[in-house]
Length: 314
Image (tube, rainbow, N blue to C red; front, side):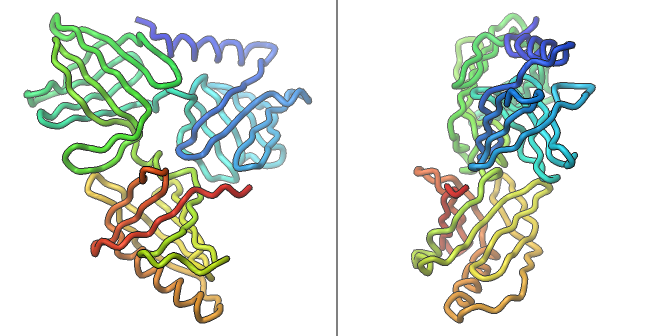
């Protein structure tokens, strides 16, 4: 069976790689990063707008998808594959870019009480039934709904109708409390099971988070503390005076920040004290979550919180 999504992607790719390359256009979400792309009507250039910036990229031959590269900078590129794309700036790869409602592939979802697990890849579902253990079963899927809110898939398992509905809304695991970027509803033979799905990294990566509160004490006026999450489990930012960075690990149980290092500039005593306090709190962080107002909340083992909001600066 050919899904609506797959058919759309094939059509876009076929058109874009023909003798007269057609424009790639649309809005994408690369984790927390919003990207808009459109033909610049100048020598087939592609305009890429993000964070108040604009890149002009030139088309380049590609074995797969439609590739645009910055003149003189092969480490800045936009590779479109229909509703999905890869965006890289000066070697930094953002999370997979998705148009509204699209899902990263493979897409995984789980539910509890009873436990079930589903993995969607292309037109196939690997599925562990509720109440049962053992090897997952393979099911041919058809995409029956594809819109800006999510996707709906249907299939048949041993004569039983199966429906998997995915909505792009924040979801919290009913047992661990871990957050995921999608709510999932599984319907099997008349029974309904709820769960969460998607890559949790997408909730945190792609944004510069500006700290506004340290353990309820606020921060010094006009000072700047930031946190950014990058590929390969790297994080970095400004700690008030100095730049800092390290490695992070995000699991179902929480998050940890390790191997932190910082530059050694000296600033006013008040800023240095604030910086020391921030780095101390970061070393104790055990949980990361998105709050009801879209803020990043990092919670230490002692219950103290660092709160940050996405940067609105260009």
